[in-house]
Length: 418
Ligand code: DSN
Image (cartoon, rainbow, N blue to C red):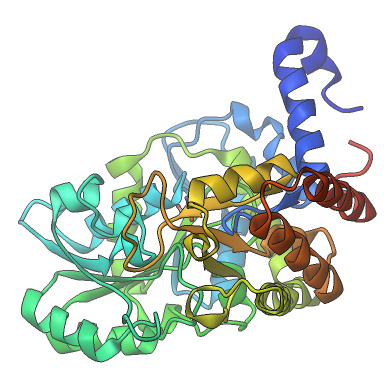
């Protein structure tokens, strides 16, 4: 058993960690932004690099004793450049939100000049940092948004171009947190060029798919691409910035000393491990399976009478309008939670309800695919979800579904030996 010393010093934290491990093992994790990272990544994240201050960059630090963090950070940078085909990479951002702030600062004069941002409407699948009014992005910049078409719930690039021509943004952000279709980053580049804007892609959700060519690439078509490292990429919690060479100095200055202090070198070590794994054939196969599983899960839901918004998925996630079966998003999230299936409530495009109790749930396959599950398990899981959501008052059915969830979870063990 790991965590022996933790147990001795702080049994309350050790107990919570053990319960969390049991929760992850005994359930189906369907939140599309979550994943189960590799054991080697967990080990790297708990190394003594956590003790080290290393403000600056490899070879140019403000502290002594940085010879080994330099090895780690240089490897992380070189591996990420190779993995994504990027001209420049900064591996220090602590989160996706930090990375986006740093990217916008790098491309503008630190957001001082009334810059404008055009991003995807959060209610159609965008992210807070793409210009929402409660985030720095909407507070420090004049924000406008684009959404999906009411007909097919896909991005309408002609419409986005019209909005861009009208708004004349400094930065156009592509990328989403709840969009089940492929994004055409080249089309965004053409729109950005037509209006003289920078193009930033936030590929946090689909980074693993992009890195393995299971989704259209963003890097050749962006000034800056940002991504977290813990979603489909399956690394530690954190982020990176990939940029064109011409922005490298501005990006590095925006990250440190602009927005952050000492980099989390233990997490950077874990990012380096993740990038190494992400260049293997096994990782490509895993990413292919994420998409196959998402399509299989969508088909199973449809067969069982629950249609995903827009009819399916092309990536790792889908949205379900649960009001069609008489539930709200919160009710569905809670019901599924009671049988150890974790999803998150989510607004759906053109939602009439409020974000805290929206019409939908968002479900995805990165984590269950990481456990080794395939299309036959997806068929089964789709039928279990439908059975529960369509008959929520049936106590017998709920007990049955929970037992099935426990059984399938235990067939695919997680973190054995911890
Ligand atoms: N919170 C992430 C997600 O769940 O999609 C986005 O930052």
